[in-house]
Image (cartoon, rainbow, N blue to C red; front, side):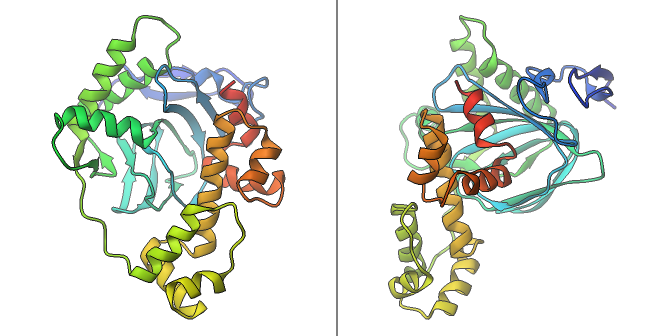
Length: 306
């Protein structure tokens, strides 16, 4: 059994310590639920970090939240620090506990729930697809093909150690570490990414309906519009889309809208403008979906990136 230490996390509602394996990276954990950073909300606290590499975001979270089915438009890799969770991922149902590395690919439908009553603490790095594409091209030395995270959970301690080291290198405010973080990123990806599998066949009509949403998620569209594109009845479209995509057309549209809103907010767009530009009826609607998908409010997310 790994040695553990009780490490108190400072902040409202965090009077007790977590039992963490020696060597666990705690960069930024003390920021969780600080009054000047975010409100205390039961057993939940999220912190988004600026990273020293463009196209990368870091998150430290403590949560007992049950995340409904959703997707990300980024690659994600992280490590469970304490607690455990279960998830129905695009690669099958999985469970992850302390020291396990967790991954997600862009567009992969997944959910997440704690195992037990204590919630879980995790660190996560999210990479824009072009960051991963550049790294993969280097790893493959210009060879054809793509790589993906093949395993939703990795239980090898060396992978967890590399992940914690990469998280620390990405979030440190020290100068002169660019070379180190680039080395760590390439080494970790080379270890955990595998040849991308051919995607499951999606019927032509469903691809047309999905493409319509992807092309302009902010514009209002009806189920009848999508059914006409697919050459199906509305009920047939609803069932076939859910079966192929793992989400209903409306749920898929909301995911594309909230991903667009996240990118706009990250680019510095004001919240009300981001809500309107991404197709939400108002800022409060965007906020509800943002919280449901990412675990924190868009206002906190925006402030973390300023």
